[in-house]
Length: 206
Image 1 (cartoon, rainbow, N blue to C red):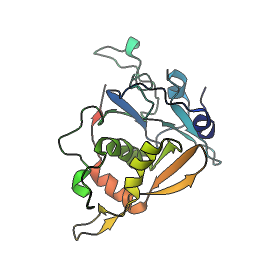
Image 2: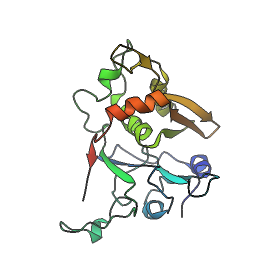
Image 3: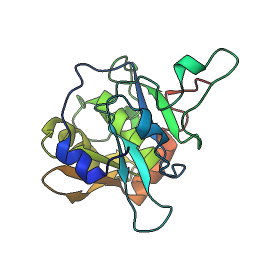
Image 4: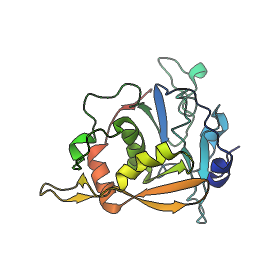
């Protein structure tokens, strides 16, 4: 069964031993919260963000715990070269090459950074940047300062927004409690991410 975002981050443990080759991300606009993905996830890294509005709840994947097993995307044992049994009935899940494992020579985000710093954690920024692009938000555990530090780069108003050199912050810290922090993309940040990320590093297994 699925677990609520609050309960998930209250009981979450950092149990992944190393970076995985693939990551999965859910598009909340396509997700119907049917629980198909959460039911098959072997590491229980999928949680539900409930909404008081009927039909508006959706699921998200904790990419920092995802092991890239593909189980929420397709059933490997029941698929072959001619047929793919997909798990999500709404095609709401994207599978990605993990940018932390084999990063590009130049990050897709690098041309848009206008700050003085150059040694940003580009792989992690791409990982969470794609979540912000696809879902408009990202949750990280409050106690994982390394992940909080990554998301804080998106809060800096140094991201190139227009040809005349205007810069914006891509996200804001929207909500924080003792277990989790919710970062939400700004309107201008969403527009910028729409330029940066379409078709980025997605793997279409079917």
